[in-house]
Image (cartoon, rainbow, N blue to C red; front, side, top):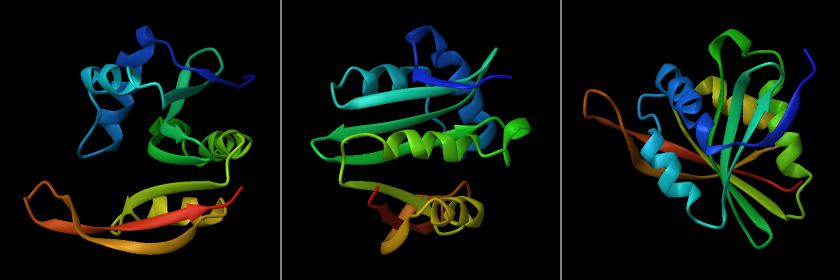
Length: 144
């Protein structure tokens, strides 16, 4: 399957919302995507061949990007599709990329470090877990 990365269409938000539900405790809804995408600086790209297999949502303001969500269908994880999306972001005319990840999400932390991100800080008690306890967010950044 030949892969492409392109701007996500509003008609594809249900597919993203389904992937979100399968991956995250606090998934983005179709309404969340519509609201965020109404902002000029917010972008959603998809990686796809015959069908959508993943996406990245981010804010691009001046020379910085903040990644909000990156998701790849579980059946397609471990095949470097997420890294392709990161490489595409790195090709933008930017100086820094930021992301926050739950300190409990070791797979995501290792993924971002593998893709050139460095740990820059912690946000204490940032995420609310399903049992209403809290966990820290690890802040990471990368200079493309």
